[in-house]
Image (cartoon, rainbow, N blue to C red; front, side, top):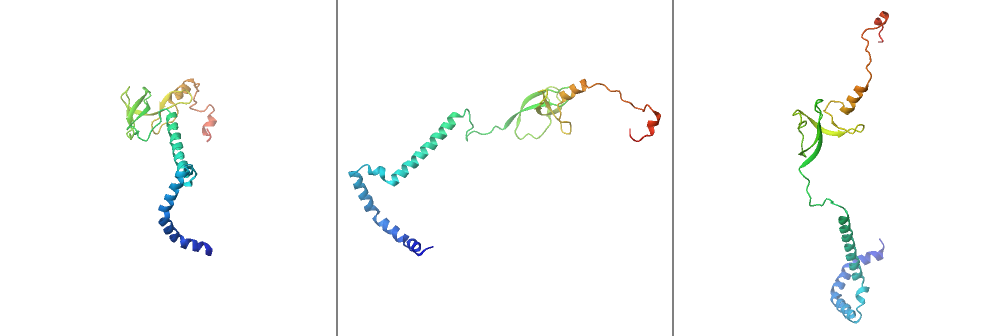
Length: 177
């Protein structure tokens, strides 16, 4: 730092003390000048900065009010989450395959649920099939394919004759069957 800067910083406490001593007189003089020229109020930097800050706060509050008014049914900070979730579920029993909505606690961990239609404990969360549009559930450890599409493919698949023994007796000893 330069020498001039150090002296200015060292003089700072003295300058503040002098300003504190003379501010009542300066305020009286400013008020007297304000009586003679009321426009002086708007030319004062402190008043201008204060008005700009007040205008900025009003602008931000107005923008927030407008945003809340334009959003339909928006969540506010005062709303609390419900303790229940509405789930779309489906039964994995091949004889039932019922799908429906159910209301369960959000912290539900005891799967599978009991089916409303067949009464078996085979109900899991459902998902929609992108091919047929049907709702299906997948039990853990089973294929994640739509059971309705699997049944349709199995019904349309041509029946093939399965050979159990080779036609040529020489082929029986070959290792590549």
